[in-house]
Amino acid sequence: MTCEVKVIEDSINPYNKVRLTTLQIRYWRAIHGEFMTHRVFSRNASSSRAIPIKKFISQVWNDPAMPVHWGKNQAGMKARSELTPLQIKLCKFLWISASKVACIFAYLLSVIGLHKQIGNRILEPWQYISVIVTATEWDNWFELRNHPDAQPAAPDLRKDRCQRPLRPR
Image (cartoon, rainbow, N blue to C red; front, side, top):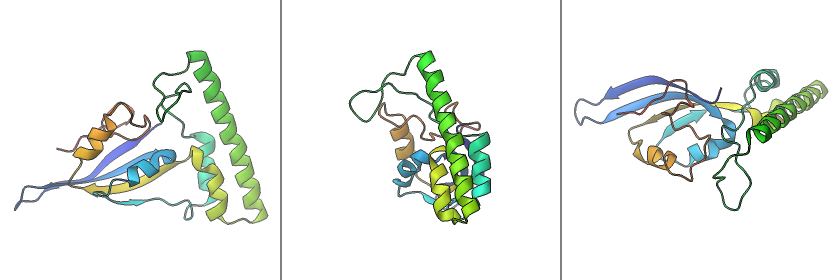
């Protein structure tokens, strides 16, 4: 799974006709920083400090988050071309293997008695994050997601990467 989008509320103010949309989104935690840069969003996100290590171990072990685009190394911030299918297969195997090793270490840290606020950090590269977001202004987000330099895994809320694509009207 890469991302999920669910419309929680969608209403239009009868006085000024402004549309207010609230979404529940689940996406790869690694791109959460990009989502946080949009200050027109009111949002609240799940916390690694609040969720038990066992729950994150289960998510990472059974459904590790991973890139949707396996970009070939090159100069710059964006990989324009993808690896070959064989290279992608090998990368996915190594990525999933690394997630299993991280689960084992997170489990061992929890057995020792380490608090989840630290132990869960080991699992973050393979975690999904759940976010509730409310906004009236979505255009900037969609314009940036359509840019050629956009991070491929960032939830654009419309493409086939999401199970329930959405573009607020």
